[in-house]
Length: 107
Length: 113
Image 1 (cartoon, rainbow over the protein chains, first blue to last red):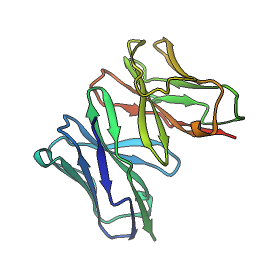
Image 2: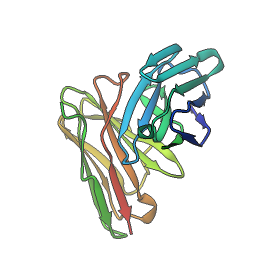
Image 3: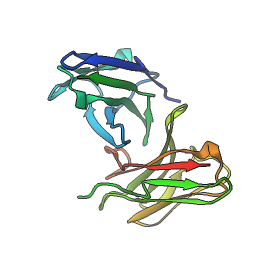
Image 4: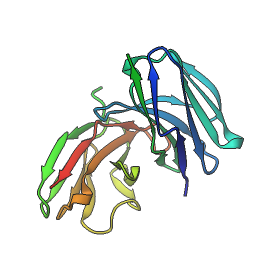
């Protein structure tokens, strides 16, 4: 079945620095999403980006479908960005998640 | 729109007890999904309903776990004879159709002592 690998597993930044998160998946996906999970556990969809580049606010996602990889760039990180970032792809109706990148932004 | 509602948010049970977790999907959504999240395994698919009918329960442990959707406004996940390894966050999601964006609830954090 589908597998999703994320790197790095954890990342510590100073406020204001940029973050680059990577996602690799095992076979072609028709849907790729980036989720944010707060320390309290709520899961929020940030971006849906099966191919190409998408921007929203300080987030930029680039997905290269042929190479089965996606990245999430967070510019000018803030302490409120701390949490877990999950990459997820579809497998028919199921969502297959990576194990996430735990981001900690220091003031 | 209140989003997907899950209750309780936290549950502590003793080993061998039963736990029932509740999910209220977003009104109008026909697909409901259950996932489990642990530190070791990450987020894993458990089961899926469409128009209240069970479609895929391939992620459900074969014993002790069951899920129902008796009406369009709620689904339950029941764990009989809970074991410490069942401790996890259980997430419910709903979507308009089975291929549409899934919206997740806040999860139920289950701790089995």
